[in-house]
Length: 602
Ligand code: ADP
Ligand code: MG
Image (cartoon, rainbow, N blue to C red):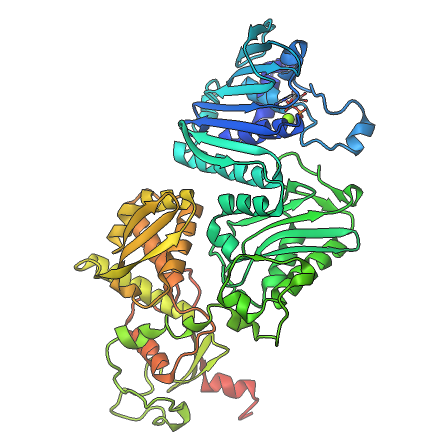
């Protein structure tokens, strides 16, 4: 084999390789540029995006500016004003310091950089096209601060451009980055425009009310209405921010913002502590929503563990974990019944929590009076039972297994009792049957949706009083983009205002269930999953999501006739042995297996 000679990479190639790590998509450009504005001490930032950032990303700030003679340097690799020595690195307070971002960006896009220093009368500008040539700055009219414009990202690296998704998807990522950063810097005013349309206009938030308003603007009024404000300090740690009451939960972890000393993080220690704290009050597949800030001494945490991933390293992770867990758990435990039933904006410092009369059984905090509402379904929709049992009758009084001529004891048998609001215990010819209520119901609803869709279309029901739901603009956009799917499933949705959605018609199958929660959850699902392209698959995904979110949740008490109705319906439903997520819906413990457990007959 012929020996290949070694050569130095050209600066452009080196930068393009580095760009591969830092700049994944338009949203990563926005993140880097926005952090530079923060580092420059900006008070207001205007962000203009065209075509999801594929065509143009422009940020203008009123920060310190860049010296005319440094404009070109700023676009070079390893050029930074933020550190000068290793000592500086120890206590770096800026978000950037590697001097890599602008070099990477300008190696894969067309960049214009303009800036004007405080007190100067004119600004200066340079332009580059994929590589930093030795161009001289030209004068330009510019207010104090910096404007950077990034056009045609990846225009010279076609292989990478191919990986970009649709304008809408890319913009979704940009919006998420901006939300995260806007929540980390309440004091900075920010405007976001997409294709010339203003989407966010966030004023600088200084006092508590303004901060709360910003959280509402970003996370939705519904979140703030069902959130508890906390501010807790102990052993040098402070935790403050907004956490959702258990009545406001999400089907995805998509409303979770956690900051450590002002930096957004995703951390195992943090996640675990939060999950533990909510464990008793949230059903397994639900997620809490929160915007929380942890503040601690800078030398108790290493936030520079990774430049792009949101990782941190705590010196004393046990201490941090326990503090988070205890603070959140205490806040949840102290929610009084009144707080959870009428979730008015709650703004309480630690010492002003509404006192609790008695400790509520935590499960009951969820969806108070709605317990029987959603469960109407088995009796109201399912056809009459073959052998209806009198209300309250127990299995022990039921005919003995195997009674001939009645179909008794075959299939899933008859309900005896309900266990912890989750499982149905039934008895059949072979022994004991255990049914996971939610999983079973979910499969039945899903199969019904599919069957109805394939047969003569889904039966619908108009709502005399439409259900109105407050959502973010983004969520409403998602609903609108999927309007065709929703209407195929029997819904009529209508945008009433930028943040209000009206539900005018529902599929009759969902009569009696919590429509608002279901729609919210389905939209969150649609947002999370990149939709498949086949319409048939899409509609099945929607059915599956609807079935999951509208089905009987755990902790609902069922009567014996309701349980039996569910068992009969399972027997009639195809594939009822598994829920839509592939988990089993029921299992059988035979008499022989039970005997073995008790060492009988040995
Ligand atoms: P880093 O942020 O790691 O220093 P960048 O490549 O992001 O590296 O930026 C290089 C330099 O350009 C920064 O150190 C800073 O001096 C200057 N700079 C970039 N953006 C701005 C801005 N918006 N305002 C003022 N200076 C800026
Ligand atoms: Mg930077």
